[in-house]
Picture 1 (cartoon, rainbow, N blue to C red):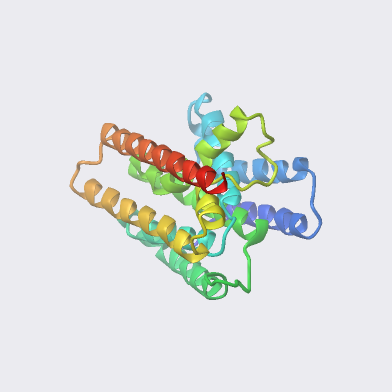
Picture 2 (picture 1 turned 90 degrees about the vertical axis):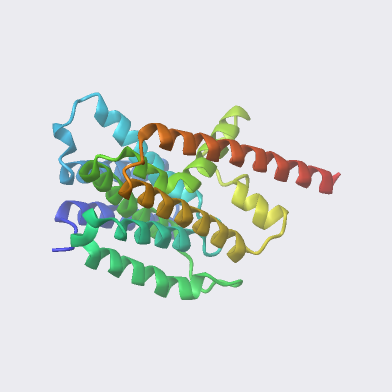
Length: 260
């Protein structure tokens, strides 16, 4: 009890292996994409999603693959990946429906803490790389889908909202500018804060993690009170998006003014 099945384990090992090779010698997009597709199929198999309506599968596929890549794209400053992953693990651990998998979650959390000792610092001694961020993203994506399915509570997708909003709006801005979204860049809000504004990497990483953890605890509390409705969650998401966009524009204007 408490451990994932062979299918999820195989999916994580697959993307980790391909990502490790890519970290050493960059691969083309095809093998990386294929590994993500196969891993997603294995996760779907484990969660018995192939019994769901056919129209739902492409949506879930895009969401899972999108999350894996978004999590990887957000791995740009010291501490942000490991702290955000730890936040998600803590949040999943607080839900009663995941109690049987607490040993696994605790093991992953302890791994994050050990890794964080060497990564959450001004001059990091270790880095997640694609092998760390992508395999962790798949693991967290599996737990998110499992949690939503078993609870019937779609609102728990907001557990990933801070990353999701930053990654999603940044991609839309890059598409609008006709930029290649698969090329490295420094246009995420957290990158502006750390690189252009000059805030400490650790401070920015902690802000992202603390904001998400605070929101997640609030969501769990509202769920226990029976008040976590879909309409309420949409309102939270809409508010977060508006606040994010206003703050992003404020930061960009400040950078432009300081460079003029």
